[in-house]
Length: 122
Image 1 (cartoon, helix red, strand yellow):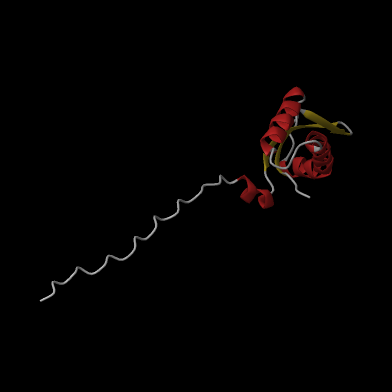
Image 2 (cartoon, helix red, strand yellow):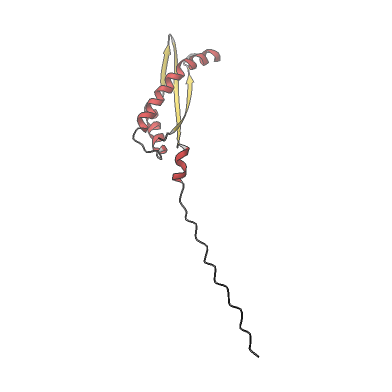
């Protein structure tokens, strides 16, 4: 079984000014939910793709994120906005199969040794 590797970056913001440590604590609270949401999107998009189609998965994820670019999370009266970004790469085990195959030319055959020149008979 092969996997795609999805690198995700989540940019978090709040419409109200929060101290860095407060924002950080809310991010720690909501980040697992955002990761789970992105994981579901990726799994749904990757389900029918062969392992060498990481580019197609990245395009599908980028398209899904463009349709819903901001994810909102609320706890009490604090609202946070998350903007996910993704990049996808192939499973390294499949890379050798995708390398271009270049046949190396065979070296030319070695010519047979030349016979020694004939000596005159005296």
